[in-house]
Length: 444
Image 1 (cartoon, one colour):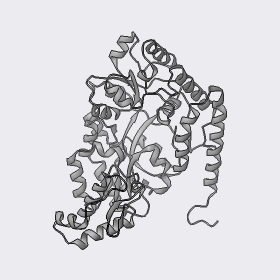
Image 2 (cartoon, rainbow, N blue to C red; image 1 turned 90 degrees about the vertical axis):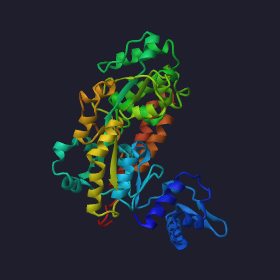
Image 3 (cartoon, rainbow, N blue to C red; image 1 turned 60 degrees about the horizontal axis):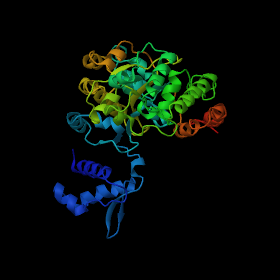
Image 4 (tube, one colour; image 1 turned 60 degrees about the vertical axis):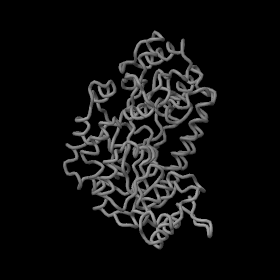
């Protein structure tokens, strides 16, 4: 690693831990730390100022800039929470393999992005098509990987990202709270009736915020809607907007009614992962990677887990983290090298051992599954392909829908069809406008 790269990595890491407006150490102090010349430090600070990460003020120093986390740095790998599950061994391996790249859990974007499937698909127009690159890098991909997990990332003949991990939805539960309430333990064979009966049995002794991690927010709402047969968007259909379709309206009405029955419209649990880990939440709708969050909060019991009960849906709602590359930054060989690193057996096995989703690499998934774990027994018994459910092909639309969820879910049930119709009309109009826009290279 050259000194300029080392300085860039050091200053970026330092800025990530600081608040906007906070002052960085002086250039001379940094130069002394690295035993290098002052002009070299100043060159790195100037480059970061041009990128919008810091701002220099004459005779005052250099300060962290407001909104710096939204900047897209070409040699930045934006990992979000994914970074927290990488060991120091893997981080050092990454730096040795890609000395000019910076790993970040703070920046929202970068030249390389390892983010959730929902976020990646909302930004898909920014990314390279990895179809040929992935096929050339792994000619035996069909045998090596769970290729069904690529389906959400294949849009309009392109592969906008490659999954690193995935997980179907799970219903985690606290056996002790069920025992105290005299309620039967969850079963994956439950349908809607069994699931709702358990919620009501628990509600006889527990407040709604201690029963399940449901709230008006987007994440729990969309999981329920898909499990109940609804959806948001299916790009393979002539009219891809499903927001006002009868199945979605029906699912939303069930969800809103349930929120009101359990008093969860306003009085929901603000930190359900911590509440579940501390024995204060009976059920947690999540994924295999939820176990990592439970451990971070110091869980001291063995939770039960089953597949999310069938509430009337046909598709399996899945969460995934994928790797995507911003257009025009990396060569084909650089992207191949990155794919080989992130899909290597050592890294994929580490993710599997940590319980961070199901590794995309089959051998790593099978090697690290723990059939004594209720979650793994539920997941590995049947790994089904994901459905189209909530894959939005626009960052603006994704933001609009996520912000709309909390508003819609606090409306009276009689208002739900109208509000969904309004949202669907807006999304439909914007989608049609985007489809009518000329593609790059086409004449207007």
